[in-house]
Image (cartoon, rainbow, N blue to C red):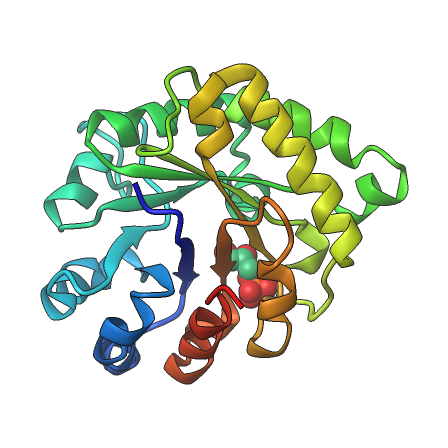
Length: 250
Ligand SMILES: O=C[C@H](O)COP(=O)(O)O
């Protein structure tokens, strides 16, 4: 299995069909970028099928959420099987925006993660502390609890990715210091190894929160940072490509 970084773009609730031109540009650069990193773009659900069609396997395509059930009376929801049917290979789960906007707690995230595995998707499980929690000195306690509750037994490097996203760094232009990222990723790695043994030691841990071309190389060089989950900067191919280039080992 590859040791390459995973650079994942989360378009959030952005993008009409015309936005797929940005995906085309990333795909056009994928042969060069693929030597440095694995590439994933997660457009809104409306664009997943078209994105997969245009990507033609050059980059992976993912969803941003799924329901825990396979099908049923859940108006407006989308199942992991539906994402898979639309040719998604990954799904982001437990993003802090969903935890805040939709009241998703750790148990819900764990159920969705199992649903993703049931459908054969790689689950990207997000954890992160709020600014108040960091100021109160409870960052590691919060992350430890989120990790224990959100990532079920059975996680492997092949079916799961952990994403550390400090809530206060999302969309704000603020990032933790290198030392703070090192501390958190080291802590998460230790917890993963404790719980999942060899697989936990190999699982990728992404950093997310205001990753830009200007700070990507520094953030990606921190030990135990296995890639990035990129929001705003993934909407512009040029920025996303620059972040992917920064993942190249020096
Ligand atoms: O999923 C992505 C993150 O929420 C980061 O978003 P951002 O890069 O716009 O800060």
